[in-house]
Structures are given as C-alpha cells and as structure tokens.
Amino acid sequence: REASRSLANVVENVIQKGEAGRAAGDANAWKLTELGLLIFSIAAAEASVKSLQRSELGPLVPTALSLAAKLSGDKAAPEFLRARAFSLLHRLGDTVTALVADEVPHLLEAAAAGLAPSEPLIVRVSACRVFCRFLTATANEQLREDLLLKKG
Image (cartoon, rainbow, N blue to C red; front, side, top):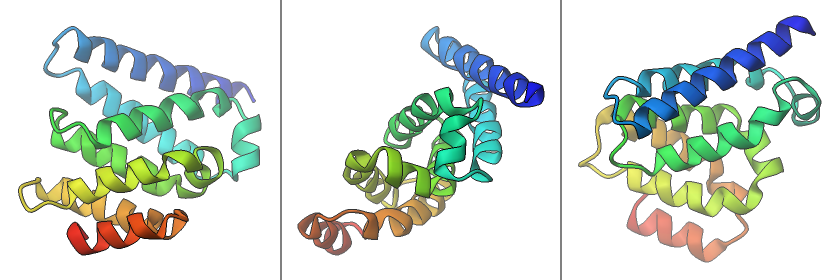
C-alpha cells in the first residue's frame, strides 16, 4: 500500500512538473509529462476498472485520461508525447469506456485526425491502435461510418 501511494505521488508530481514546464515554455518539459503518462499507464493497466478506482492511483485516473485526450488532439505537442497519450488511451481502453464513455467520440475524432498522412509515423501508428480500439465503443453509427469512410 505504501509503495502504491509513493508511485501515485511520483506520477502526480512528474505530470504536474511537466505540464507546468510546458506552460512556461520549457522545450524539454514534455519529457516529464511523457514519463508520468508512461508510469501511470504501466501501473494502471494491470488493474481492473473497479480496483483501479479504489487504488492509490484512483484519484489520478481523471487527470491522466483528460490529459491524454487533450494531448492526443494537440498538433502543437511533440510527436512522442502525442504517441504516448494515444498509447495510454489504448492501454486503458476498458477504463476509458467505463469511466468516460461520453468522451469516446472525441477520442475517435482525434485518432482519426492522427491517421492523416501528414502526421508523423509514430503518431499514426498509435492513433490507429486507438481508432481500432474505440470504433466499436461508440453507439453513434453515423459517426463510425463518417470516420471510417472519410478518415479511416
């Protein structure tokens, strides 16, 4: 339990420092954000949705998911940070569909945009995984068809 609490504190601090640095214009601060998302995704991926919510990482779930959703669609973010955001969303797919199902259409649109030939390869590969993972998670058939035909 103590190790989980320490891990949660490390993840929270690293993400906060990374985002504060990015906001302040530090060109290398994105690496801290990426590290925080990586550590969080590794630690959280092993847990079921319910056990994750009850764990020490539970309070970080909304923060990490919303940050990953924001970064995945941010073309100004470094490509490896965007790829890490897509990776986290893919790795925590069950958690995303259980806790923020209403965000799935936005994630699908960000993933579809990430598939564009103008995007870096690492972003396109990561976006493709998210696109495939969440395409069936939305009940909006019109959105699914539009994304598949126009961007998929």
